[in-house]
Image (cartoon, rainbow, N blue to C red; front, side, top):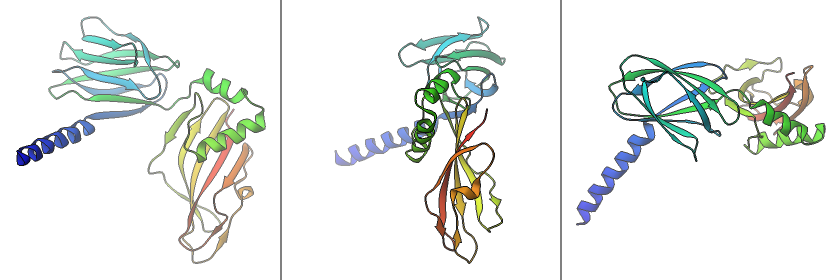
Length: 233
């Protein structure tokens, strides 16, 4: 019985692992078209990170569609073999165009991560406090890994580093994109054999509104994080 239970648990773990990888992820801007594969066999789940799908438009006869009104997710299965479009609108005002390519494969969940902020909500967040306090709130949100209301948080992944005159390298990791403000998280690295002293004013630019550095003394091989808030119009 004990061996049978171990066998059963092993199957469950295998299924969980398989389901974990059955996910398509698409970072998407407003009004952008994304090509994605979709199963002909089973309904595919589509959801928007931090948002809810409220409207769906497409040509009737191309698909079967079910909505989950509570979660804002949709479940779609094509009923013909040729590619087709689906236009979706979210509760936060995002609009996306999905171009589906039906395939003979198991269904997957399709995750859409907004790269554009929700302008009205972001503007409300930015104007809800005095300007200086808003800058402080944005900096704190970045250091605490929190998402300001309406902002799009964009992880840049492997981004090319640039070399500074001091010998340091700096690489942009994450962008917090709002209505008028934008937060930046940079990784600073000291590849030199010398101690390098840094200060937020070293990274001044005309649209800079606030900056902070975790460590201002970098020995050989040290790295630290630079936080900046800039006005992008």
